[in-house]
Figure 1 (cartoon, rainbow, N blue to C red):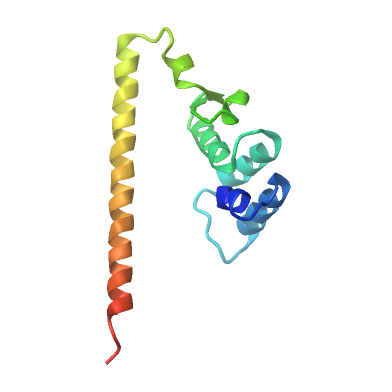
Figure 2 (cartoon, helix red, strand yellow; figure 1 turned 90 degrees about the vertical axis):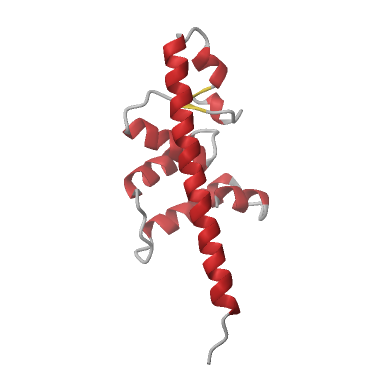
Length: 133
């Protein structure tokens, strides 16, 4: 959402932060991880990274991670993020294998989400093509 507001509508970072804050405080919305979302919003307002990156970093920190690996150049300007090359520099073979396994789990998760989205689109398509009696 933050990316769309920025790229498609030309919103500046303070405007995007205000929109996100309004969504977070709207009682009609259920925010699954509201505490981390609010903390991510605070990071977003202070750091060069995008909101999605800040949310990931905050979520990872709340789970005990020291940093989040990122390819985003703006995110890498913050101490919350490290590049993959920095992380793998001097890492033992065992750690690299563990990292690869973690990436495999993440890939499986992404595939499951994609399948759920495709199923939801299919069901939406079916409901749109059904005509009332």
